[in-house]
Amino acid sequence: NIRYLYLNGTAIEELPSSIGDLRKLICLDLVGCNRLKNLPSAVSKLVCLEKLSLSGCSSITEFPKVSNNLKEL
Image 1 (tube, rainbow, N blue to C red):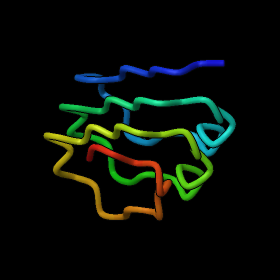
Image 2 (image 1 turned 135 degrees about the vertical axis):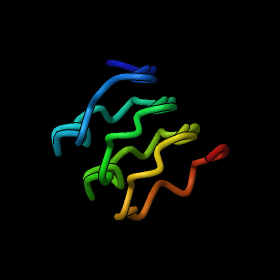
Image 3 (image 1 turned 45 degrees about the vertical axis):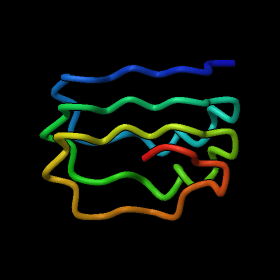
């Protein structure tokens, strides 16, 4: 039932594919996660996602399809 996930400024290099299990997630904040290389395709399962913050994630090379409900990127 997680609705907000703030990982900003962490040294995370990848999100697990299980991120797609967080079906009620509204906000995913990855600001400043400059080691993050890609977003898993499971992000497309986040149907409630409205805000995805990726500022400073300069190492991302793959970007999956995201929810049509996304209001802020």
